[in-house]
Length: 396
Ligand code: SAH
Image 1 (cartoon, rainbow, N blue to C red):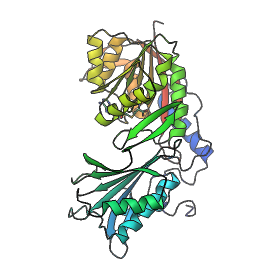
Image 2 (cartoon, rainbow, N blue to C red):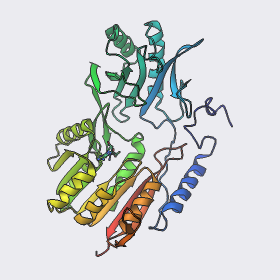
Image 3 (cartoon, rainbow, N blue to C red):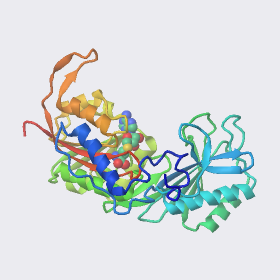
Image 4 (spheres, rainbow, N blue to C red):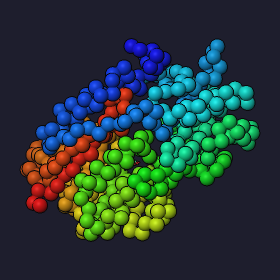
């Protein structure tokens, strides 16, 4: 394998398709999606990237102390918690990578110790960087094992002097023995405590703990496809389920009567509410709840829903959610998925045989059919692929 492309090729494992020409990667993903989903509906040609490098707007670096090397920062070696030093990565935003290197150097000169996962001693645990690619705003989150950061003012001053593009620095405290990166406590050390990015003509505020798509260029194409599938006329009530900071619902808001968004993560819901306000959008409400429970409430309240957007995490949706969706009977369901395997399982449920827990058939559910499926390459060089899928109620 070609070490010139990436010196960490054997250690990292993040780029499963490294060394494969981009066109081949797209072909491979097309095939994977077709194999899994063609029986449900027509799979369109995958939407690829023009410049498929350095697309990741979110960069995570773990910190550790290693004998002979001192403080190191980078990724965990595949399948372990040993940190492999990374200075630059084919996928990650270049500026973000430069900032991580500067933080490592500054930590050395400030004599800040890296956190030791085994003993719980030391301070600097992770760095998380988020870049608003259209606004140029940059967030740096310093994740520390303890809230006491003696030289924080000078440290932040030096860092911002080296990188004047940084617009906010946040201290996050994670003193738990966990593989989660962020802890609960946050203190804003510099700037506003969030960044903004422009997507589909709207401005979005993104906090440290909120989900935001890592590839903004492709997200714009994905959302356009989702909106095309929704075929909105201006009269609809839509649900944006698993809405994160409200991106899909707000992008659709000017084409509908009403947007109802639901999301579990508190900080994301807060961002969504503010995002509606800063874009002057008055027809969108966001609720903090489990999407399945919320859908049941909507169904029980007899809410009329015309189009349902659903964008669940990799594990897919739940039967509870889908049963409620079937009760609500929207004309169209636009399912956005980052995992074609769980999408296949859920499409089986929405279009096919419904089984109870014992595997017994409860009869066919023939309410929905898949109209079209479009894969979108949000994660070049990796095996991951995003899919937009349009379902329509059968009686239409
Ligand atoms: N549609 C958004 C977010 C998609 S990611 C976007 O495109 O940016 C999936 C989102 O589902 C995450 O924000 C996650 O916090 C949320 N989530 C996970 N489990 C959930 C649940 N049970 N109920 C509601 N939201 C959930």
